[in-house]
Amino acid sequence: MDAPLREVLDDRLGGCDHDAAHVATSGAAMAIPLDSNKREELVNAAAPEAESTVIEPGRMLALADFAPPSLSAGERFLRFAYSIGVPGSALTAPLRKAQKERLLAAAVDPLTGDKVAGTAIRAGHFLLNGAKLAISQADLGGVARMFPPMERYVHGFTWLADLEAAAPREQCTPVATRILSSWLDANAKLPSKPGKVGVWSVGLAGTRLLSWLTHAPLILSSDKLLRQRAMTSIAAHARWLDKNVARGEDLLAQFAGWCGITAAGLLLSGGKPRRLFGESGLVKTLGELVGDDGGVLARSPLAQMEAIALLVRLSACYYAVDRDPPEVVGSMLSLLVPPLLALTHGDGSLGSWQGGWAVGADEVAALVEASGVRTRPLRDARQWGYQRAVAQKTILQFDAAPPPMARHARAGCASTLAFELSHANQRLIVNCGGAAAAGGLIPPRLDSGLRATAAHSTLVLDDSNSTAVLIAGKLGPGVNEVEVDRRTIEGERGSGATRLEASHDGYASRFGLIHRRILILRDDGTELRGEDLLVPAKGKGARGKVGFAIRWHVGPGIEIGLSENRQGAGLALPDGSYWQFISSGGELAVEDSIWADKHGRPVAIQQLVLQGLVSRGGGTFSWLLKKMG
Image 1 (tube, rainbow, N blue to C red):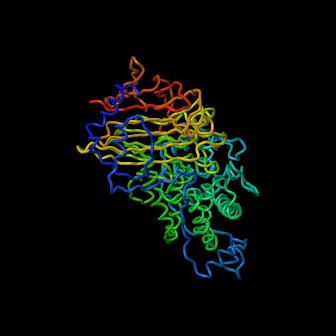
Image 2: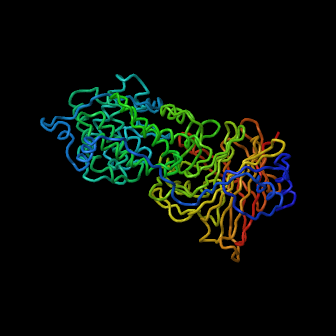
Image 3: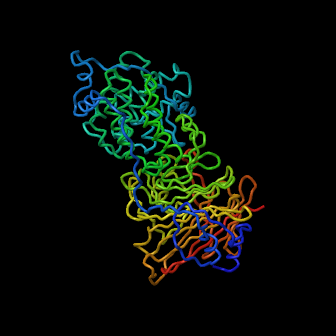
């Protein structure tokens, strides 16, 4: 590293006495030979009494273990008999003639819909992520595929919440029943087996049934014939899910299916055996879906929100029949909310991870309020894989884990060791995000690109992904192990910092190099200093060189001014503040990029790119981002 830059980076910590610095560790230190004695002295001089906890490397998250509600012998018999196919009516009223199932109570959806989207439905089109679909032109039979979010919105009937938010119920009922009637006409016959995608996937069928049950007054307040058709379809959906829920396309889809079954068991007559059956499957699936720290295995904030929303709506079905939800439901909500909040920035909106986008603060806050959970963000979600550091008005989010396994990923991204940074209400460094919204205003052809390593603020070797990006949102080989170390640096004059260090092996098999990233965020939030290291995987580097690029996607509305020596840049923020970026080890350039906003719409932004050639024997690239004035 250049001597002047080394002095800048070492002095920027703001007077922290290196010799007297005390480092409190909350992670296992990795012995990493850096090229500065001062830095080693600063970050490794731990107090004698400090304890360290090893964060074990691995690809799978630890699974949460939950026990189903305790049952009497009679209830266990009912559940077993129903699970092997004995009809519920034969178990609850064996001497009576089987009667048509009827609705026992009306649940109220705790989640308020989007009034704008609901108004659009009343005007004749579905509106999602900025994309419009005329209701008259929508293929409600599912033959012509919609882009995935719109497909879930239309066929999952989650638009009912938006419609109900737009106007009084008596004004919305004709619209809802007209669409429902058309949908029932197009789906008169249920298939014998579920599909992996489309109308009759387990996930969509479960979501649809739950939506119908939590908005029953809206779709059943119509003429008698349509009401009978709707009730027949509700009962048929419940029976179909009873048989096919285990064939769900992934764990989250199975979870949606079990929620639909349990809700039907609560709200339909003679449903006790179905409820017991549903609760058992629900608890088992939750234990497999969620890690010990509350993060879903998909590692996606969108999936996290979906899981919370399903539990919130299911809880409403319990309250509708004056029953308390099983203890595991409340415990799971308490577990799911903190990791989601860990990915919020200063303005309350979400970071862009695993195909998600900057979901707005209002939507996140409404979901959390409906959950009834009052908690703080989870700082160190080790198993979910995200680290969060807060310094005054500055928030750092760091992906310190392998991507989700292929069977869990829906819009999986090769984002390991990427980070996002915000100050107050302004995002400074972002990831592109939006892969899960591709097909709306984001063109479908950008899907793979938005999931690539280059679409994230991290290092890329030879324009290749750290983990292979496959079709249909899945991921292939690449990162298998990530080692993480988190420490708190305490300076004598109160100028401490949070130090995060992580490494991944995604490039080890192809290039023989380990990527290691160190991030140090000052406690006053005015400075983030980083170092990206490429270390030989087998101790001795191979000959030759390979191209590298370190990318920092800069937040929306920020103007970038590149220095004459192409070693730094100035960032002018919309709020009038100014940040300076300094780098070494390559040539800095400014390139175009895109970012998905809170509606999943593409916004033109820019990115800083440090690129060049690096020896296969390794290399070090230091950089600094500092608030001026």
